[in-house]
Length: 238
Image (cartoon, rainbow, N blue to C red):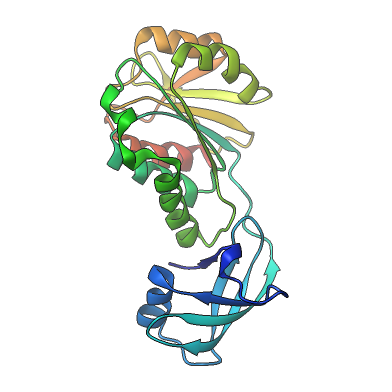
C-alpha cells in the first residue's frame, strides 16, 4: 500500500482537514508503516487529489490524521478496456491490475464462451470489484477510481455502443490467430478488447473487425486474462 486512500466519510471536521481511519487501512498504518505521532504518511482522496497526512493520534481502534491534498494524481492511461467476463477470481485480479496501470474505463461484456453461472456470482458485484480497484490505486499511488460497467448482451453492445466508445480511437482485439504482432509504444488513445479464457469466437472477432478493430497478439503463449492485460498494456505503452 503506497498510498492511504481516503473517502468523504473519513472526515470528522467541517473543514475537511482531519480524518479518522480504521479497519484495514488503519492496521496498515499501525503495523506496517509504524509511524510516530507527528510523522507523515502519503494519502489520496478518492476522485480528488493526493497529499500527505500528519499522524495526530494512534490507538488500537483507529488512526487520526490531519491531511493536506495538494498534488495531482498521475496521468491516466489512454486505454479503454473491454473484457469478456472471466472467472470471478481472475476478474478481480484483472480489475486490480488495470486500475494499477491507470485504466479509467472498463467494460465487462458477454461472450459465447463465458460460463453463464459467472454472471450470478456475488464476487463480481460492482462493490466487490471496486474493492480490488482500490487495491490497484493504493499500489500505484493514484486516487481516481475507474468506471466499471457490465454489458450482458454481446450483439447490442458491439453494434450499438462500441462504435461510440471507440470513436476517434484505434481498436485492438487480442486474438492468437491471423493477428499482427502487438505494437510497441502506441502513443494514441485506443480501446483494447480481451476475450474470455476460451477466446472470442470467429463470429465475435468478425464483429470487432466490423468496428475497425485490428487483431493483435503477443506471440504463441496463451495467457490468462489477468496476465494478458499487463502484457498488452505494457507493450502498447499505456
